[in-house]
Length: 534
Ligand code: G4P
Image (cartoon, rainbow, N blue to C red; front, side):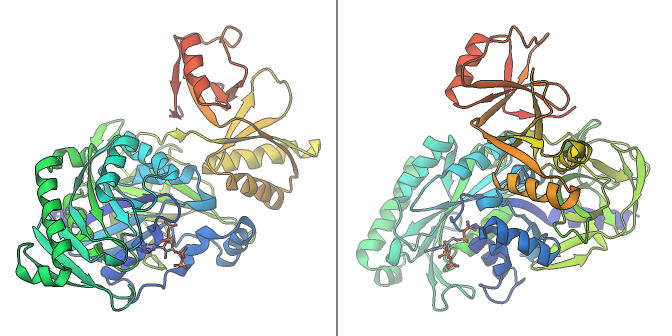
């Protein structure tokens, strides 16, 4: 037993579970693929094309969903590197950007933020960063596309601070840029690392390494680039923030790396340093206090539910983040929210591009569970005799709203059933206009694709045709206020007061500046950007 316990602990210590966040086209897919290349999970880069399904239009996307049955392979990937067992969580971007993207961040222990050197901090990165910041997880920055023309590295560091409000510590610094990008100065190892791309990034880039003062670099780089590098190193050492591990782990200081995922320049120094600095799974908050990952029992929570778009297979996959102990195939667990025992018979794990049945898994891992409709977002599962409940997953702010009703009044029951199901899966949020007395509902989503998915699924799975009307609102706030009274709450002209399914008040606004005005007019109310369901 004691030896087995030591084995558990060693397995958990090896785990690194992180999400990659970025604005579309910054290079997230390319970088992920290079991680797999360096981890030996794929032999040559360019083979993870299925992940590109992110870029298809909605009709293609649904067709693909149908053909593949279910698109889970791109949701989480596991591979080994340098003695670590790595779980990468995909955060969908492009058209399928949705609330799932935010929820995935709740399952991660750290985040890698990919930034395009030419574009700097972009919109979607800002939104995802905000969620990481709220969770206080470590955030590592990879400034990509240094092989193309980009902004000045010092300006990019300043932008992180000005736009995201996070201080940075460059772990390495680029040597040249654009077509003169040669490699990086690795500050941790205090060495120059020059890369060679003779294979267009298909295989691992070889590096020439050495002390920056070494004469050979003067001829390899040319004296002006070499001298500039020596000046940059001095400037960084005298002017920049100091390396502070505690602040990094608290998400207050971001270690920054420069490179080019396409050519593999800087990928290896990034992986090495990132895996060394970032944490193995940390304790998670529950109603019994923080639960240690090395606790001797299995526990975890559901953070994502993926429906099967193929009408022939109505089942769903629920993604579970294991928070403590060891999972074994076929184990009987307590489903806390449902108050019943469930046998986890067909768990799945995702290795590089393949889906396999998992026999054992440990805290930090993500497994996919076959879901006949018994799991909801935020549900806790734990070992048979254990009774704990993990902190819920908040609802994140939808940015698009639509008024929806059924075209055929006789189908009202199926309409409600379908909407309820989709809300439980977490793809849409449902609100009721306060006062209206009509049977219309307001649907809120993070990404507009979800509206099309809603319409498609209501028709195909529930036989319901709907009438829709886009609403002009883009901002939501959940209102917390003692003795809330709809009639005395003071609104602005661009605002709609609505209710959640539980009858709690929410505000939908067209313009962000109205929120400030509303806060001034209703000073006793607290306006929340996320909402934890009771
Ligand atoms: P994403 O997942 O963040 O959306 O980005 P993705 O990796 O798909 O990359 C977006 C585009 O940027 C791709 O070009 C990719 O080749 C390119 N790219 C990624 N990393 C680098 C880099 O380090 N340097 C340069 N110069 N380009 C990079 P594309 O033309 O859209 O696709 P493809 O035809 O190359 O597949």
